[in-house]
Length: 333
Image (cartoon, rainbow, N blue to C red; front, top):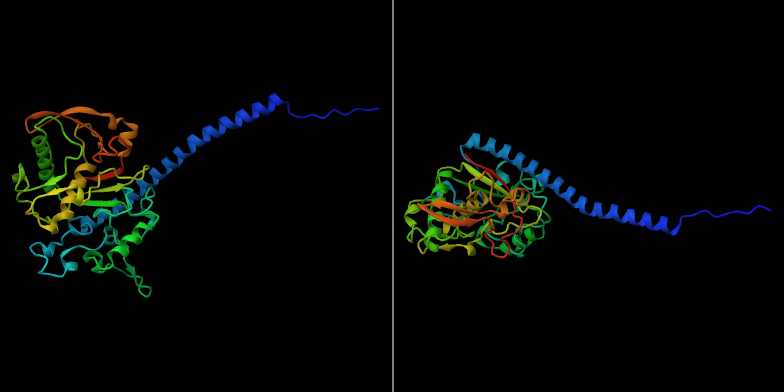
C-alpha cells in the first residue's frame, strides 16, 4: 500500500517569507513617497521653465514682465481712489492671462491643495488670483471690477479655497526699487536690534518717514517696468512659511498710500524669496537648499551698514522657522 506525504511550508519558512515581505514593504513605504515627491518636483520645475519662456517672450515684446494682480496700472500712477474707476487703477488680471495660459492646470502648482498657501483657510492679498468668468459662447475670460472692490468677493474667495490646485505665486518687481527696499530692510533691522542680530522677518516695515526711511522716501509705484520676478510653489510641505507675507505682517507708515500695498508686499516677498544673506549662492528659503544642502542650519555673521551682526536662515514665519520652505524659481535682470 502506497502512502502519500503532504508537502508544504514549514513554520520557519513562512516566518522568513513574512519577514522578507515586511522588509520590502518598509522599503517601498519609504522610497515610494520620495520617488513621487521627486517626480512632482521635476514637473514643477518643468512648469516653471515653461512659464519663464513665455514671460521672457512677453518681456521681449513689452519691455516689462506683466504686473501682478492688484498692482497699480501704469496709466493710473498719479490717480487717487476717487479719480478713476478702480478697475482702471488696479490690474485685475492674473499673470497667466497675459501669456494666454489662464486656467491651464498643466502648469499649475502640483503641491498646492487650494489657493491658500499658508493653511489658515483664508486668502492673503498675494495669494488671491481670480479665476474669472468664462463666456461659454466666446470662451473669453473676464475679470470684473467686483473682484477688487468687494462685491461678491467672498464668493470668489470660497471658489478659490475650494479648488484642488492653484497657479504658482508670481511676484514681479523693478530691480532698482528692490535694491533700495533691500537696503532699507537691512538697515532697519540693524536699527531695530541695535546691531545685535538680523531677524528672520526683517521685511516687516515700510515707513518712509521713520528711521532709515530716507532710503525709500522717493520710491513711487508703479515703476517704469518690471525686470525681475519670482515664481513660488508651496513645495512638498504645502506651505510658504511666511515667505509670502500678507498685509497683517507689515507695519505701514501713516502716510503710505493704500494703493501701494500690493507693490510693497511684492517687494517683501521678493526679498524673502531671493534672500542669500550668507552670500553662498544658495537661496536661504528654497526647499532644495534647505533639505539637500544644509542651508536651513546655517548660522553666520553678515556685514551691513558697517557693522557685523549675527544671522541665520530661519524662516520668517515664527511658528515654522525651521521647516523645509517653499520651492522658488527666481529670475533676476
